[in-house]
Length: 106
Image (cartoon, rainbow, N blue to C red; front, side):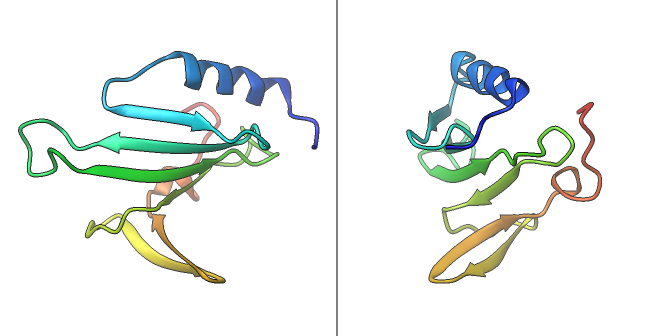
């Protein structure tokens, strides 16, 4: 397994320690830069009762490069588009802060 920069290790610890209501985060056992995230739909909204699964990956260049976030739950949303990767059909998150507007100060 490649050496993980200290900054990523600290971010991982913070991400796992700070519980946010409605969000569950599980770190991949064999890859400390890879997370499974489940977000519950907001109460009293049309999303209540639904859950949305995401995959989060922190690249080796993180913080200089943005994290990679993929939606694993089919949804219709203006910031989500289809992306095929081999046999996988992923939903790409289209946010400028995950692309060209990324800043390590965010």
